[in-house]
Amino acid sequence: MARFTPHTEADIQEMLDAIGVETLDDLFADVEPRYKGELDLPPALSEYEALREVDALSKENVSGLPIFLGAGAYDRIVPSAVGAVISRGEFLTSYTPYQPEISQGTLQAIFEFQSMISELTGLGISNASVYDGANAVVEAALMTARLTKRDPKVAVSAGLNPRYREVIETYRVEVVDLPFESGTTDFSNLPDDVSGVFVQSPSFFGVVEDIEAASEAAHDVGALCVAVCDPISLSILEAPGNLGADVAVGEAQPLGMPLMFGGPYVGYMATKEEFVRQLPGRICGETIDKDGKLAYVLTLRGREQDIRRAKANSNICTNQALTALAATVYTALMGPEGLRGVAELSISKAHYLAERLQASGFGLRYPDAAFLWEFAVELPDVARANEALLEAGIVGGLDLGDGAMLVAVTEKRTKDELDAFVEVVSNAL
Image (tube, rainbow, N blue to C red; front, top):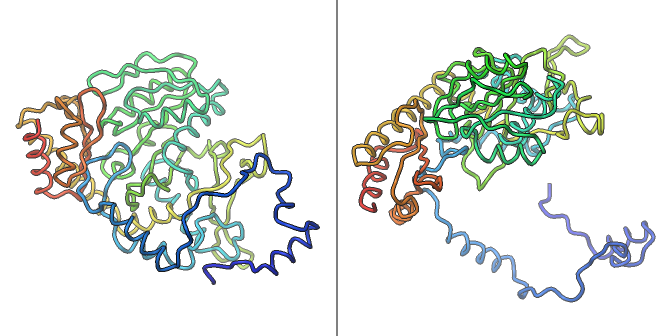
């Protein structure tokens, strides 16, 4: 396949003749407003000159630094096999296939992704993914409204990722704030008209929340419980489906995807089997063809906007097939023991760092709350600490803006890097 297919002047004129116009300007005559005049562009460069300029610009970037920034996207080890598999010619397009007869491999990979998510979450049905974690959260909010036949109104706490909350509000879903004390959410006094109750565990601050208590409280007022979970955490924590959650959602970036300047990532969604027709997006199903052979197809697409138009459950008519494939390859490579090992390493290293910081005189924001690999540490000058860390070749944590830094520690961090973090912060402050 050619990488570039430029049109010759003869090609362009032939197309214009077929359309019935004389020039390209005639083709765009009805487009307004249009830019008038000449663009102030630099002189044209040869291919070599352009590549040399791009190479010079790329050298201004810095890569390979130890990263302690998390808040929803994590610097984890990605086996080389992940990139090798998803770069194969069979997966050149990231789009979901519509022709099952020629796309069995891709459809099977999506089916495996769904199966993996169902096993991790303890829920019977998973879709083929949505755009990202925030998108999954808001789709779950709308889903609770449809299932409870209530106005879209959800109860959340400060433990929910603030970016997820912003997306919920963008969709004009009403948000009720829940008490958030000592790092955990109080679900005891819910409004009786909410459609959904959201519990993020681990929370935005890394704290393990009580999903079972959230589920019981939600069901007492006739609402549904939505658990927002890091998939790596589900290798060691009880599955949300086993704790009464009706829907589980989250960001699957930790499963084999590097930090990529904001994406593309992949949101996962899982729910109980009885709610399958309200789950947005698409589902790959396993079936038997006319010859009795195992086959995979897209199913239940009648819920989508490209089929039902304004009556659709959601305007999502696709999924993140390529990044979902990366998550599937990663999880298959790691297996249950590998995922558990990643979680346990991250936890032990995070607790080591927290203990070292406390020994240096810096207190944790929520000292009595159980956390996994992310925690908030109180510092007198977070901005100065991050400046000093960057000067030392370390990417610090997230400045929470109120005298605390949110620090994430993954299996990728070494003891030397953890000790250097403490030393730099202590010297700077």
